[in-house]
Length: 581
Image (cartoon, rainbow, N blue to C red; front, side, top):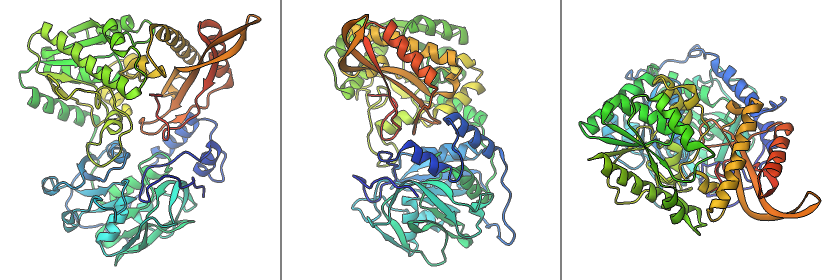
């Protein structure tokens, strides 16, 4: 089992720490005794094939619990960065999931008669002052329950077991989990060691009455526990992250134990979202911030379905866009939405003036967010009374900017979340706020959007401003636009564009000496960032062919005035973020 050094991590922390784990170590942990796939796409193919296999029913002799039949899963958020991944995986399996913040009265949620409860991980120790507690009403309801990491500790403590906080038995990073006993939770899983993702300092040292140990790791004797009679199960590892190889099967098995029926589909989300928008908007008029990216385009399509001609879309050319993007986006949007009321607002000078001499990333994001609102307000005044502002905000934006459900940490303010002013002159509508990028693409396909829109690479709302490390200048933007165009052209030419989540250039505030044309050069360095991801909550650097990296480097140095050195970013998320700022 491989462990990262336990440095600067709260004893109860449930977030992975990649800082001291090599790529080779990760691959050997993910694929013990096997040859690791040559690329991320190879691993995705393995996972996809594995997930296509159906899972069998209950083992002989295991009684099905007698509970109320329902297809609705209640997830209690104790502050993990990955709580929404649980909901996402649950929905992907066909079960509706609802997230409830820890500490709030659960009576209203329980009145909806959920069929199962999942307790998330979290950054606290159960003995920490102010640590979120488990509402006894959840246990009184006798619903099938799954506790994950901190959720396991809460179950153990509340049901009569013992938790040791900040002990030496913690694990951080990849671990090899061993199934000890037959359990419906392990149905269809191999009995060989399973790669899982651990991140904990606390551990259950004494099981509650009626529970048995059903799995362990080399360093943790009680890594999974169960009380089948109560249909209560708990895991120390995180099945919701893709680093836990059989995590999706484990979640599916739990939902089978709960005897739920998988009835939730994307068309169900469309109907529910449209109904909610109509109920909220009524006869009001909506201005949609439309960037031409996947998120805002899908939001516009959903809003068009909900409010029709009462939707007005504004595309802002803020001077921070990629090469020729303003014209391309306008053509693309008018092609996809022929009846759309679209306004293109010219605001290049305004944004660049506001950003002059600003180096701090958070300040950049705040300025950009406030300036966007100023432009939208100006355009709304031209259009007549506008009641609502719609954005294509996704869950990764929310969880990195603020924590709507639990005590998770601020990572960075997104221009459309933490960067918004307090005195917003509109009522905000964010119909995609609880979705991930892959779900948004599924939603867009359900709404009939073309692939050319759905498969555009993500581009940040603050644009190239957060890909210039330091002050934003017209000269720096010109260099970066040219570099970005080369990155995109070569990636498309390689045929790997669909395998990459994002690929882009970053202009560094560093100059280096070079030799060009037998003469000395002293120019800026550029970094290339190319990552693979499933949901943007975690990301790995892309293992790309040397030939592609060589073409990128050669073209950037030879064709872009101002660059004479190219670096390749091999950081994972976490600890790094996908964007540099």
